[in-house]
Each structure stands twice: as structure tokens, then as C-alpha cells.
Image (tube, rainbow, N blue to C red):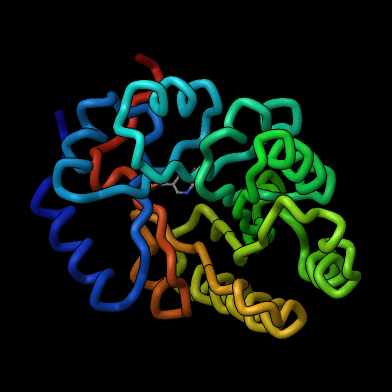
Length: 224
Ligand SMILES: *Cc1c(COP(=O)(O)O)cnc(C)c1O
């Protein structure tokens, strides 16, 4: 087990002091690693594969808040709708529609973040600035009463260029501020940005939720 207990406690304390929520990204990690952080009080865990999340939910404590942080296919929403706490990667209106439908079947309101494309890479999913704004001011969100849009999520470029990352986080924060005004419902309050390598920078640019994996759990091995 490679869980870094000391680092967890240090990071947790720092984030608490800054009013930033920590999502422990546990994808690919065994249940005992999650349990180790759970035993220290961690409740918010992030996963990005539906089947893995469903399996973990079934065998770990029921008061864990499960965050789905990856790209979610519409046809898989039904598997996580009964229990998911927050879906970070809502990148299309079609997906929002499906989440609304599955949430209604479960008699739930599911909290969601809209994912915004801020990175230079073509491959990262998400709304662009204009389409995000259009959706929020259109009033169409009211057609989806079983989803609650809590804020935005974004991933910066895969790069060590601090100026590039800084400008991407700043851009996302500006979309967040604008969307919050457009939305004006008092529940749009979450900006999920920052991972192991860039969370401090993301917080300095206005993030209030960070998704940290490898720093807490050690490097991931996808070939097991
Ligand atoms: C894997 C992942 C993370 C965590 O990455 P680390 O570099 O291990 O901290 C954060 N966000 C998303 C969307 C991820 O897929």
C-alpha cells in the first residue's frame, strides 16, 4: 500500500484552512487504500470508470461521497444514478438530459458540474465559453429539474508551463464568475480545478475544489 498518510494530513489541513474541498482521486487503487484515507476522515472520493465505481460503492462504507470525475457516456448514467454525489464532467446538454432522466427515476436530484474546455489539447472534453454561456442564459436548464448545476470543472493542459496553466485557470475562473451571475440561484458555488501537479496554482486562481490522486495514493499502474 502506497498511501501517503503524512502528506494527506498536511494537504488536508492546508486545504481546510483555505476553504478548499479535497477530492481524493482513487481510480485504479484497491479498496484498502481508500479505506486507509476513510479511516482518517476522508469522505469525498473521485473515480472515472463506471464499473470500477459501481464495484467500490458496493463494498466500501455507505457514507462515502462518490464523485464521478471522468468522461461519462450517456448509456452508463443509469449505473451510478442511484448513489453518485457529484458528477464533474458534464460536457454536453445531451448528457445533462440523460442525468435528469435517470435522477428522476431514482427520485433524486443529482448535483453536476459543467466541464469547460480550457486546455490546448483537442482531446479534452467540455463546453467552450460561448456554448456554456448560451446554455446558462437560455433558461433550458429549467427543463432538467432533477439536476442541480453546482458549478464548473476544468482540466488544464498537460504541461509544466506555469504561465500557460495560470492563464487557463484564470480563464476558467472568469467563466465561473460570469456563469454565477447568469445563474444567480445561490447554489452555483463550486469551481473544480487543480490536480496533484497544479493544485496550488489552481487555488491561487480561485479553485475551491481540487482533485488529487497520485500525490495521495502513489503513481497509478494501468497495466495490472
Ligand atoms: C486522474 C484525474 C485526476 C487526478 O490526477 P492526479 O494527477 O493523480 O492528481 C484529477 N482529475 C481528473 C479528471 C482525473 O481523471
